[in-house]
View 1 (cartoon, rainbow, N blue to C red):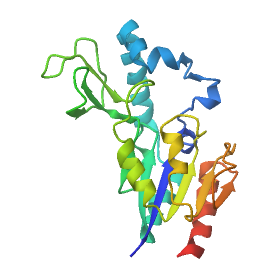
View 2 (tube, one colour; view 1 turned 90 degrees about the vertical axis):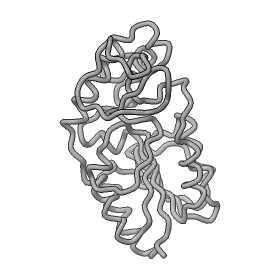
View 3 (tube, one colour; view 1 turned 90 degrees about the horizontal axis):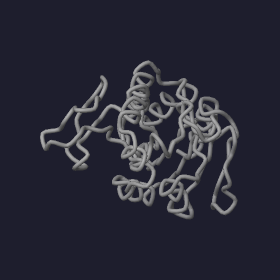
View 4 (cartoon, helix red, strand yellow; view 1 turned 45 degrees about the vertical axis):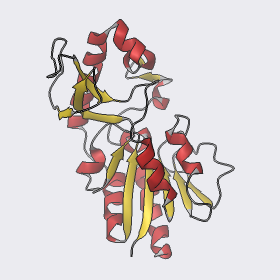
Length: 229
């Protein structure tokens, strides 16, 4: 039986693939106030702006390539039962080779009706105002905006509670409920936090921090994990 390795990833793991983070841009996302482009209120005020913003993010994600952190985590499947829980909306984990990926905040390559959480549909091109789902609702990105419920959090909690090892990579641990997952992992399970700026994790049990960018940190993590097999 392989040990269960749960990995929570944030924007920092995709930053080295050229996808910018909130933290690196002083609270702005590609020059936009996040409340204008990533909230239900912003959508109500200017849905066209929101669609244009995510159309640009979709193009950016299509052009980005998985980096060594993404592929390194996929390689760990040889020794561990790896479950990725990501706050990222890109598909770099999947393209990097990971088999089990849970997207907490939705996926840039999916869309749905404003009237319902399901079904969702694959989308690689642009979504325009006037593009309607079968139920007559405007199509929107299948993204969890600030202030909306996080449908996949229960699955993420279940994964984390069973983790023999927990790894957190490239997240500031300030966006909830994702940030609370580190407190749910079993007390005795080894925990690793990888980030070029380690967030506040003083009260976390059995913790090792690796203060490096994701690519370097995952390389170091792989060496350490081999000693836990």
